[in-house]
Length: 86
Image (cartoon, rainbow, N blue to C red; front, side):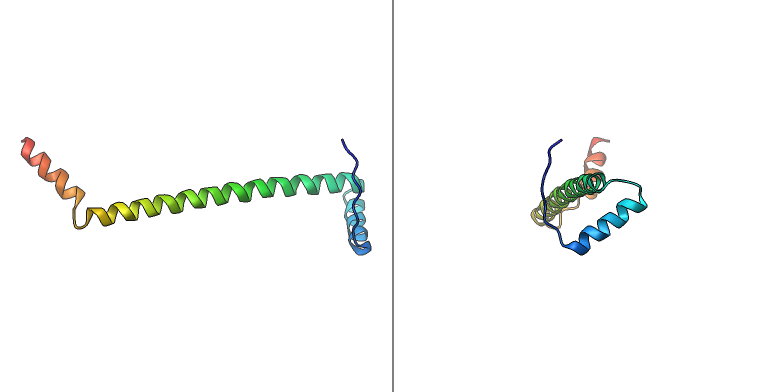
């Protein structure tokens, strides 16, 4: 592990110490856990953003295909080809 120095407002330190005391943890352990949760949440948000971007791209692609197809009806086309095979 590495040691860091951080400057925080006194009231923030008091709140952190209060939580640490309630949870029977050291200030350092509490801050480590908070940092780990922050990292996990950041990764989750980035993954969610990527998922949304991919979804929007898929919707845009689908809309473009729909525009190109015009009034073409895929179901009717399949039925027509089935009838021709009979």
